[in-house]
Structure formats: structure tokens, C-alpha cells
Image (cartoon, rainbow, N blue to C red; front, side, top):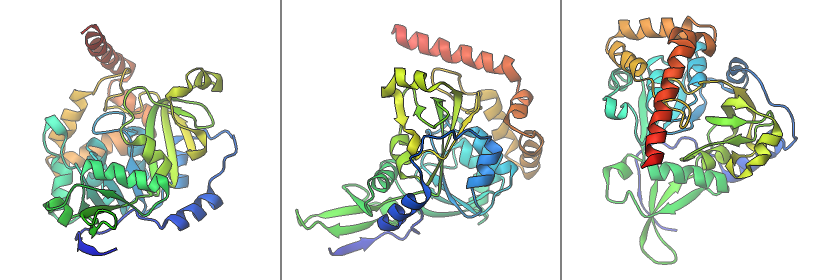
Length: 334
């Protein structure tokens, strides 16, 4: 196959499919066993310095923030991260010094809330490297190829753009059509963490609403950590099997963390904590503000439950639940 053009970006997250199959055979089990553990134990056991990590959800929606805070609390370092519309999670991880390499589709901004002062400065100062750029669609296809066990997937986009030039993709002559096509490399992350609505103790995980890339991402991961709003009995999972986006045999750990997406949105449960996100954006404009935030909300609390008390506890969460339910009910009536 004739390679016509190559992107200049560094390739991260790529694993030879045969090596990935071998790794799965040797390290993953289909045994139906209890996988419950704490967030602290999951981070300590599975996440190593230098890993390539991916956070599930999308933007500020259904993000496993309890994992993000614990990664910072344990001061993991030299992590690379997929910037697949990663916003609050990647902003904190870069600002804290845990992540210093990013492949970017959309990062360093908080969507309608504005840009990310802390992580943008880290990139501008050379403390965090943007190793490559990519589109949101191509990131999903990287995970799809990783899930399928193939080294790349063909796509008909990025050609003729600066995004391609900064990517790790290649343009080749298609052997069937004799036309140019983009080859997007597969991706098998070291660690994926995804927050879901409910799971059983074995790891069967259910998502209400849009799953975004999490179907493919869960199946492409080497290690998969599931945090959930509640751990339920297996029979509850069996009542609505069509909601089980992620079956147990992909999962390495399952952790019950009520309100585990705060300050982000958990669809049908609770709304974005705009007050808290706004506070972070204001404080993160200066090194002193970043340190003050991290000391108070990350390194001070011993776990996520203590963090929740600091941000307003049940009273704050109930107000966010009311906003989410009001918004959902208004949408349903329309």
C-alpha cells in the first residue's frame, strides 16, 4: 500500500493488535467475581507513572471526577492523556502536573464557560506537550479500531487540513478505489475510567442517555475502571439488559461513588455545579490560586466524600438534582 503523506504528530496509545490479544489473554479474566474496591485502591493498583489514560464521558458530562481527584491526590506523574473533548478533567490533571502529554481533539477550554487558564499556560510554557492533534470523529475511530483488534481504520476526512499535518495518521492510495484515503491508527489505552449510572459488583455497567465513545473505549482499554452512582444487585441489571453498555468481562474494578461526576453533569441525576466550575476558572488564572484550590479541594480531603462536604454536601447536590430534574421535565413536556 503506497503511503502518500504522513502526519507529523507523535503516535501514542497504539499497540500491535497481536500483542494486545496476547496481553488480554494473559491479564484479563472472564471469571464472574466481585470487583468492588475503593477509588484509592484502584488508582494505586492500576495507574502507573507514564501511562496513557482516557477519561470517559464527554466534555463536562458524565466524567469520573472522583478518579481525577484521586490521581492528583496520589501525585501520579508523566501521564499522557487523550484530549477527546476533555475539559474540566484534563484542565485539573495538567494544572496539577500529573499529565504532561496530550493528544488533542478538544482541550484547554471549558466550552461555553471560556478557555482554561491553567492548562493553557502549562502548554505555552512547555510543561505540557501537545504531541498530536486529531478530530473527535477520528478519536472514536481510533477506539473502534482498538476494539476490533485491527491496526488502523480508513476514513475520508482530515485530508488537506492542518489537523492532518499535526496528527499521527497517514494518507494512502486505496487498493480498491485507487483514491486517497486517511488511515487512522488504532488506540488501546493503558487505563480508561468511566462514570456510569449503575453497575453490579461484577462490573456490568449501565448508562442512561448517550454513551458517546464509551462503548468503543471500554472495549479498547487494557485496564478499565468503572465508577458508578450506585452498585445494585445483579437482578436489577438483568431487568433492563439493553442498558448494559459495558459487560463485566471488560472491567477491572467497580467503585460506588455517589455524585462521582461532580462538578460535572450526570444526566437525569444532577446538573453542572456552575458555581464551583466558575470558582476554579477564576482561581486558576494565577499560580497562587491554583495552589490554593488544589490544597483545599484535592490534597486536603482524604477522599471524594470529604471533598463533597467541602463543596456543599447533600444540600448542594440536592439543589443540582432539582435543576437537572426541572430541565429534564421541561424537555419531556415539549
